[in-house]
Image (cartoon, rainbow, N blue to C red):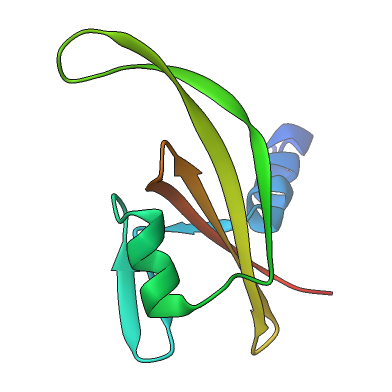
Length: 103
């Protein structure tokens, strides 16, 4: 019986370990922000980000079935204890939080 691990499995494990870690909350100072928070709420709890960039625009369907184009922004906080935190906003709502070790 062949007990060698296939190369594709090793490659997937390696790539998985290099990806940023996703979360549903971000702790800044002694406060927490969660997904769906507004940009104003995040700014009031966490202060100004280290950097902020307009990534582009995304088409979404609103609660009433209408198609809208919303701005997509990425804010970066840190490094905090060697970690960078990336907050992605779509239409002024926090949609994704990822973290990765800074250089």
